Every structure is written in structure tokens, then in C-alpha cells.
Length: 285
DNA sequence: CAAGACTCCTGACGGC
DNA sequence: TGCCGTCAGGAGTCTT
Image 1 (cartoon, rainbow, N blue to C red):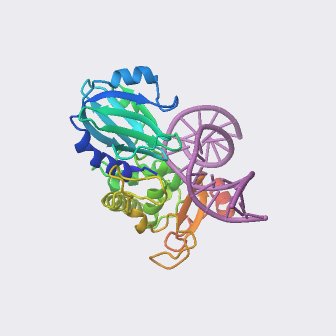
Image 2: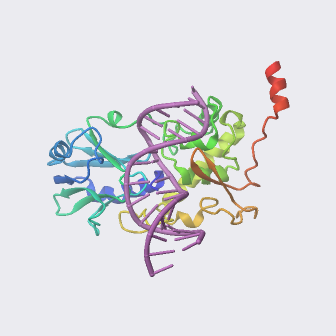
Image 3: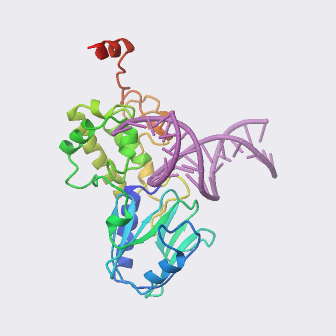
């Protein structure tokens, strides 16, 4: 699924092809693709606009247009963005003709992806936490952020308003690397473990970007048509029953917040549950 | 505020 | 072989 490393890969590969190009015409297929616009208005507004820059925010890609507006998109599960290549007409959701004769295609098997044209980026994006690879996110930030909430680590790290860009795969991989159980409560993570988690997230994302993302099914491909390589480095994701590469214990899969969640029961010890006796005693004080 | 359920969608996969 | 039920999953929305 396109998470931060996949979107980063897409943006890096498409940037030199799109920067400076002018959209001569656009076509949109399907009523649900666009947010807050109609296909007619959207295509008219985009036509003639020059693409100044292509960048990423969380899992969103952002095209800065020469009139100051931004074209913002989310690939969700199965969306793909690429120039030319072989378009599958069954799944093409948007097509942008470029002034060099090529076409920017947005395809999506499951139709969850979305596009939006906005005057300002902040108008288009929901509330989003900081970028995990930015200087803002360091051990001290993480320690404070975890302590100030009472959330299970897994759903908290998936929450884009907490931290931008992590999805199911990279949360599981990061928690394993940090040796933190997905059901640990955020406010009970010791400070030094928050530092370890920050480092783990940066290492996992860095390695995944270096590998051009993860492809474990038929969906994600880079704009150049290649599968990513990080799935070969998965420590836990999709490895239920297989031995942990660190300790040999069988990887387990549970469901947390309707999400498949993978972890090593030995490297990531279960949080100590407060017994009912302890809880009663604590509450009576 | 936290957490769970539900929704969207369709290809892949397991079972019989 | 083929049919059918189930699953996966990001994020918005609604409910508890």
C-alpha cells in the first residue's frame, strides 16, 4: 500500500519528468475520484497550468501549479501514478496530457484514491502530525508525544494526525525494530524506549525508501514500473508463523483496531497488564 | 478523549 | 474446474 516510502519514491521518480511541464488537457473518470469539485470544473481549472513542483506530505502527493493552487492526491490502497507506460483502461481514473506529448496517469483498481484541487495545501489536507523524517521528530518529541496520550501504540502510530506517513506495514516493522509490543499503552513507554522508537522509525523508513518501497502483491509499482524491494527485508509483516530473524520465535499475527498486526512475541514482550487486584487497589487510593 | 464498528472496492485466495 | 465466501486495507464517519 502506498505509505510514506512508496509515495516518496513516486515523487522522486516523477519530479524530473513533471517539473516545468504544462498540463494541456485533463480527463477524469468516475464520480468519486474528486473531492469538492466536479470533473468539468476540475479539468477546466487544471488545463493550461504549469507544474512548478512535485512533493510529498505524509502519504499525499502534491503538485504545485503556477497559479498558486495545489493538486493534492492520495493513492490509498491501489492507486498508481506514472507517466506514459501502459495504461490499463479499466483502472484509469484521471489522465493529464502534458506539453511534451506524454501523459500523467492516475490509475486505481479499488477506487479508494482521491484527487483534489485547492487554493492552499492546508485547505486540502486533514489535520496531520509532523513528518517522521524531519528534525522536528526526535526522541524528545516522541517521548513527550507518547506520554501526553493514552493510546495503544499500534493505532496511535497509524493515526495521521499524530505522525504523518506511517501505514500498517511500517508501523509493524518499526515496533519490532524498537522491541515494543503493539498493544503497549503510549503513556507507559519509558523515555529511552521512545528514543528507540524514533530511531527505529527513521531506520525503517530510510531503508524502505532506499529499496524504493514494498511490493508484496500485484499493486504497488514505482512510476518506472518496478516493484519495490523492501518486502525482502520485512521482519514481521506478512510473516505469521515464520521464525523471527532476531530470536527464532514464531511471528504472531493479531488484529488491533481492525488491522492485521504482526510482532515477535519474544522480542516484543507483551505489556504487563495491571491485574484486577492492583487496579482495585490503585483506584481505592 | 479513546476505541470499536462500519463503509468504500475488487482481485486474490481458500474451501469444497 | 468452478463457484462462492472471505479477506486486505486508509481514512472518514458514526456510535459507544
